[in-house]
Amino acid sequence: MRRTAQAPATAPAFEERSERNTLRTEFTFELPRGYVDESGTVHRTGVMRLATARDELVPLRDDRVRENSAYLSVVLISRVVTRIGTLDDIHPGVIEDLFASDLAFLQDFYRRINAEGHTRAAVTCPSCQEEFAVDLAGGRLGES
Image (tube, rainbow, N blue to C red; front, side):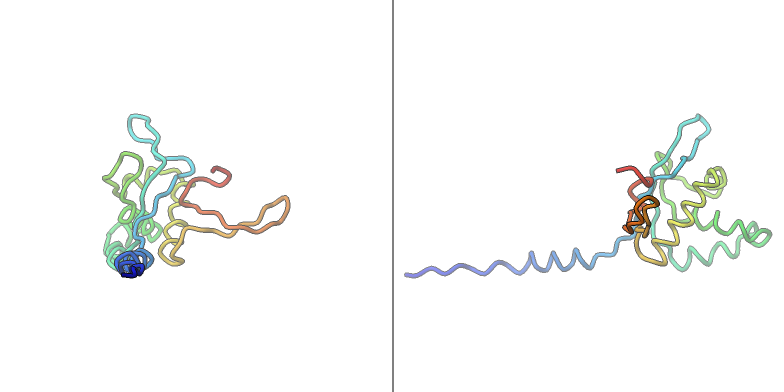
C-alpha cells in the first residue's frame, strides 16, 4: 500500500489570514519628557487607542472646549490615552499637567494612528541626506 503525504489542515492558513486582517487598535508610545505625578515619579510609556467618532464628537459639547477651542485637544487626548506609566485613570487634568513637548508628541501620535493608520514617520538624515522610516511608537528618535 502506497502512502501519500496528507495535505496540511486548512486551519493554519485561515489563522494566518485572520492575523493579517486583524485591526490594531492600541499603540504604545514613549513620551519625550514624561508625566510627573504628585509624588515626583516620572511616567513615560503609555498606550493610546484608536479614536471613535464619539471620541471626536463628545468634546465639542464640553463647556471648557466651547470657552477655549484650544482645550479640544486636551479633552480628546484624555479620551484615547488609556495608560501613562502606572496611571490608568487618564483625565483632562493629567493631560493638562504634561509638558508642552509631550502634549505636542501625543497630538502628532494621535494624527498618525488615526489619519494615517501607522506610527511610522519618514525622516532624512541631516548628515548624509539618506531617507528612512522610524517608528515613533517604539521610543524616541536615536534610541534602539
